[in-house]
Length: 98
Image (tube, rainbow, N blue to C red; front, side, top):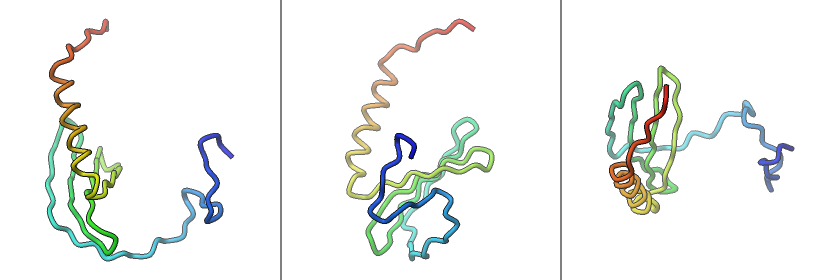
């Protein structure tokens, strides 16, 4: 076992188990898309029987990564994002030698 792997009460589940996940009905409530440099971000507010959530998809040349944030954590997520935006504007940019 790799040091960061944890045993699961559900038994060993490799990342590429090959077994398909059961389809869960998801309703899309709102979608917004932004392009930043070479990356496209899609923000999708969705809902399923387990609740509402925000899916953030990053697409870089066809490679996609997702982050899912339950709706119950969106306010806290926004607060931290606001703090990061503020810090990014206040902290001087370091100059690196090329």
